[in-house]
Image 1 (cartoon, rainbow, N blue to C red):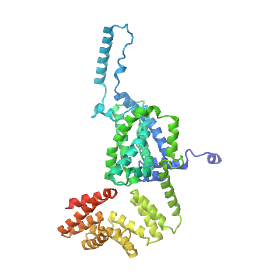
Image 2: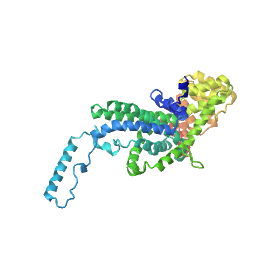
Image 3: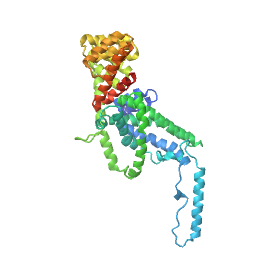
Image 4: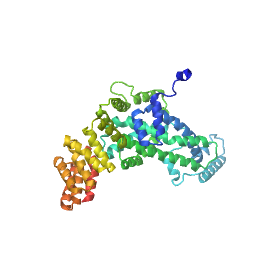
Length: 459
């Protein structure tokens, strides 16, 4: 027992948490991404990518390179620099090299369906095991954030990059490591066997698809994107990897400069002082806030800490965990207004309409202008879902009177009027919704675009 107590742990506690989160991706990817936000480390994720990449490139990519590699012509022919060599002999060597090269190109295996066009975008070079770390960190993550800022209405690219790069980078690197780990292990087991190269190609494709699936959960959890937007972003962000591969060909001689490696560690680790602190600071601030809130929940009378944790989980689209904390807040204070409001919205989405209205009634009794009167919009939507059109109209009319430019509220008000058999009034309200959506400033227009499109369909 004394000996066991003296043995230090193999990994620090934070790295063990990261390892558990990485393995949890196979069971509960959304929950694992949330854990990575709270306890992830860029250095650990980078190390995991390098270790998995060495195994994957050394087995799967090696087999694929052997089977599908396009041999350059210089391997078949090199000019004879001896000036005394007979021209006829040299011409004969060249012709035989051409024939050998042609025969090789005719009988070599090709990538199914896409053929050699595949190599315009991807590479199997087993020596480039460091490429995933570089391409994901320098090209893929910024490309994803740029697409989200353009299509998702989450803010300017510069702001989003500073705020979310560190967190998304950790989740992205962990997703890549987890997606390729099973196939790297399979490659190690099967390396000595003689298998059809298409089996290794299937491993390569499957690992890429699994990475894409994990990235959908990363975008939902880290950025709050819905499934449709997340799938779209993941589907169109992959060319950034191909661009990165082309760029890396030119900068590869400097990639392993000791000075560059030290600077990367300092920058991403946030060690550099002054104004330049690295992208990791934003992530550490989020982790510190989460730990502070968890510590605050130890106080049996602190309902607000549970409310704030619930809001964090809502941003990560983890409604069940959010509901747990809101419920704990209500156990402490049944009149906690924010907890009642959020639980009302959650119960409505779950289809528990009466329970939802009960929560909203507690909010209205305390402050009927809560959340800029949006409680009335939520009440109106709940009544609409319940088919109680008169009550829905009354609530939404009150809301749109107070918030006449709220596009979502106008859309639902138009839905109620249309359901009541008042198509002309409904059309006018839908047109108002479209007008206010188009008149919104750019940073708000992205958020109102969805409701504007729905309103256009109703006209």
